[in-house]
Length: 610
Image 1: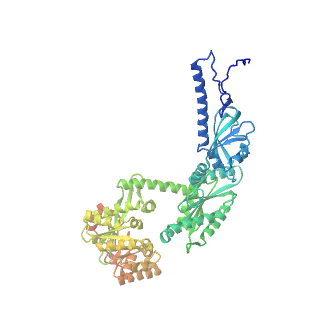
Image 2: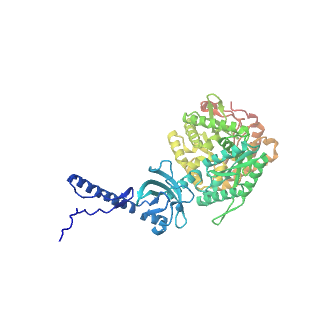
Image 3: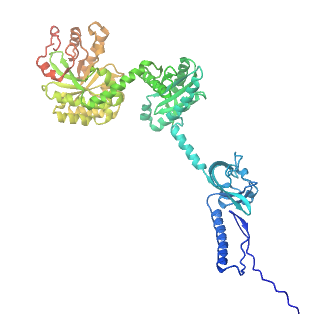
């Protein structure tokens, strides 16, 4: 048989490898001919192994990646592949994904995520909104990179869900601009809203009014009913205010019990006054909270642009000054800002600053006004009155700086300083001469008054029986068990307790039942022109009779004429105090005054203590 022609044997062809990122191509042949070396064959085998390893690595990273990933065709934008994370995150099955394009997932955008002028490059993250299978919108940051998938130009998308992060950012932004309790805008957001309203008002003939509303006696609600009821009251007030305003107006909570309203479209002050009355009426209606009927009033200060200011901070400041006027004059009403208020506020701030320096520098001094026994004419004691000798302004009146001290809390330091100085000075006086020191109600709230008095008596060496503490009826208005306990403890030490300005309070007689006072001081308003005023005489006679019945000392303040002394002596008043006897004097003059004191035991003997 003829032999078959000899043919060269071809090696088997390697399988075609396809993977994203590079066009698929036949694997290199491994046939060996005379021109191929062993090294070349080894190199080609290594290339094949590398390609397979890269494909396996990509599959591993793509399929098991916890980040949702999608491969889209670059031409028709059809979805070619998704990983498990994308299936779980979107809620579509793989079969449903293969029927969609990337645009089917996009909520609003019309361009694909990889649209750019620089095709083929890796794209940084861009923000997108997609729609899940259940219709929910999600926020995404999408990273994209072009590659080749199954011989087709494609794009790999990595989808980072930022929905929760954006919600958290939105919550943080809201919290930074809103009050946590009421949900109303806070001062920061209010300023932005005011700037917009003021900008619009400048472009028109209209004005804007700023109303700062403060609740009256809100602290009493917290103290009596608890902070929970107080919080609910504030939320209720915020809702009532909101219901009274127009869409173009602004409302914010400034602090604990103050709210600000910005009224736009104001043409005349009466517009703001009308709104203020409506707001006060709305707040004044009872609030039903946890079974309690809570009634709270409010006061309002008003500033109007541009006359009272054309900037948000200035208007708020002026409205707050007007609020202070409304609260001081008559709570439950409103007050417009006046230019003089700012000047007074500047003066007050200056007094506060200088008063702090005076307290630190020990510049305040006690001056002493004598208390005179009307039957014998002898000095029984002195009332310590605080004086402020200013290096530039001279002697500053207590009426000017004491209210500032009480508003700022400096009264505790001032009161403690006067108590220590007065006791130290009195310790050098004769043993039968007492010293009287006034106490502010605020000093009782600190909680250390008893220990302060005890320590002062110990350091000064003054016997407790020679110290007299004067309080006003305002202190007893609080009806605090702590206040009464402190007063009883002080009296137990031997300190005498005196009620000052008797007859000017709300219920003086009831206070005499709540605490056994050692002395009652008749207010000077009843003593002035006593000889010519039958009504005043009847009141003074009743107070003196009451004091005698209770066994307490009666002292008349503000005695300025001999006729007043005659009337008081005839009615049986024990002591007198006033300019007729002496003005308040520094301690350097007290010993000389005691040695040369006059005698007013008879009407003709009435004279000034020189």
